[in-house]
Length: 480
Picture (cartoon, rainbow, N blue to C red):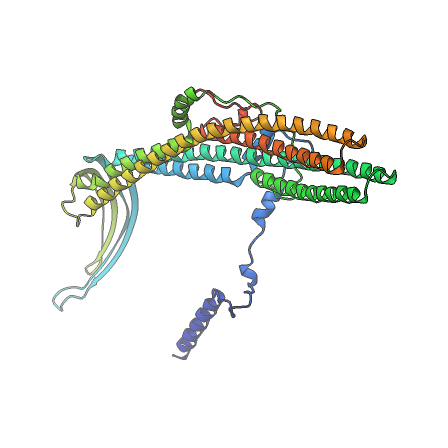
């Protein structure tokens, strides 16, 4: 008896120890940070994998080359790819509805019967393996075929979503690329402004030293040069932030050094407004996100049939094969070994299930209607995106042309003002004003070019024509 008590106490102690091993206490204070135990510390394996995937970036890369890196490294593409693989596996799982199910089974039975004094006691032992087969031959509601159809359209939706994700990655790379190129151009413009300010300061000092200028002119020129240095520091910081945005779009750590090549100097002309209607229609036929919603709608329509299938009878083929090994004691053991097998057809029809099937079908129909509304909403949004994308690109081209003309005019005005100031025909304020106008013209030209390239990328994305092949040679539209 004592050893049983000791055994029970040991089991209780072990259970309490195991419970303590899996405990997860909350923070002890509302103002002190939680100190994680050793087993709660997270692994750096994922981050180390990202580090290991860093490519060799020793030369300036074109936009298409950056896109290749992004498609290889950006986790969004792998996530969408794995989601598509999950849907494909589920479709294969749905095809299993057309296959029979075979179940292996085994049993052991021991039975004793204590008889009266007039009869012998019985001791029965039975055991043996067996196979059970069930096969759905036909469902009169078409649920099996509809389930496979639903799974297939779910795969199509996942694959279209994968394509849309790739286009989203390409768009993010383009936006980050043009942002970095513009930031680098901003540094060049800020350096040019600083050089102009230094030139003005040198001539202001020279005129003062020769007695034809004032100390106030020198101070004003110095202030403008200090402002140019301040703007240069801001431009350099913006360039570093733009570089971090590009590395994120590429799926690389932020401290990876990326060099980019300058984009093409020409922008394609915008399409004529009369071509917008076929352009919108082509975009709706081409965009993978719209196609994914259409596939989801087809899957939801098939789900209505799947939900209503239990209201119809189903015809099954059933079969079994068993091997029984029996021993019966009736004064002596008597072996009774035999085979048990059979096959047949069965018709199953649920006459009433508490209206579960009816309500499930109503829910599936409502879900399909919801997806249809979502599709129509997305189609309207896509048409608006193409329309506004065309208008934005057209406006950006006009601003780009106007900013280029403004830059030429401001440069000519500054050159003339500088020569006139050297000759003593203008004062320092005229020169500094021309210098400030030139700096603004440079900034506006840089911003206009970035806006134009970004608007072109957004238009290509909205029209569904954004792909790896046309990144370095963009077009404003493409026929389907």
